[in-house]
Image (cartoon, protein in one colour):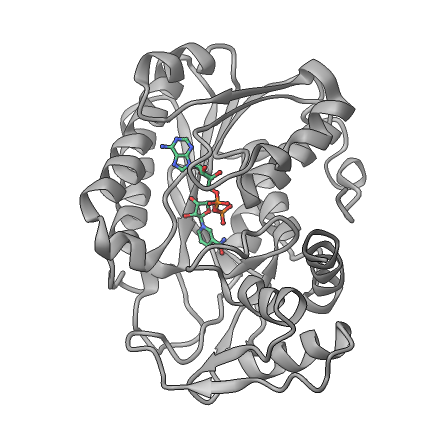
Length: 334
Ligand SMILES: NC(=O)c1ccc[n+]([C@@H]2O[C@H](COP(=O)([O-])OP(=O)(O)OC[C@H]3O[C@@H](n4cnc5c(N)ncnc54)[C@H](O)[C@@H]3O)[C@@H](O)[C@H]2O)c1
């Protein structure tokens, strides 16, 4: 269960409201679903389980009963989507194929799910007269630019089909907000981590991959390059909080692109050392392999726009989020 007191932060603003979370059986979507249920909302989850897991929702189904509806299907099924969207005030569009290398192998399939699927979500939301759609955009939009911090006014630099689909999603959010009553926001997530992030995938994010090495295989984690590269690692509750702030915003957001992160840089070496220490495996010193081409050296978000438009401040810091994350990996890996 979440370490955040959602009621304390968001009061009764979501009580009794019907919402849709696409990709709600995935990592971020299941946390969003959990917070919405804790806030008294009804949540319809649409997820085809291509990357998510029914087990991510099981405890919520037990706890919240029929306030949670789970539909195992694709956002590419337009009639079903239109049907499920009826009566929803907000849609949190998290469903996507999320791997950069996967997108290089299957660009057309990624475009279908991430772009056509997003149009389907917007059209269903428009037909249902939903108030607002929140889109899971990505810091991949900044590409290989070394400028710091990353600010939304920088030009995009798509280095993979995945990044291109996410930037296309932002453009779609802006277009639908400009052309129709539906309001939208594109939240650019930076390196999100937390419980339920898939560690089994070949494309696992770095914290999940290190956890699998240290806990499951009792092996030293592998670092690509010298490890002094850094990222704005962001605990998942911060992203959930930003989505809730965007949904409840009293102002029209008009498709605004907004960075969501912690606003700090942590090096991969520091991360590996903290993880080994927390897990009491200091002897598992990381090994190094050559740099991966195309990896940016540093990434850190400017949070000015998130503060200005959403009154967003990170609510869980890096160290505070790392402990429950590793606790969760231990509980599922041993
Ligand atoms: N995790 C991060 O650091 C990060 C960073 C930037 C952006 N994002 C974006 O956030 C969103 C959630 O990512 P996540 O890390 O939770 O990944 P995830 O893979 O755990 O969640 C994505 C979910 O979408 C579902 N899905 C995929 N295709 C679908 C389809 N056709 N129909 C219905 N459901 C489908 C998957 O089954 C999965 O449950 C994604 O849009 C991702 O691009 C994530």
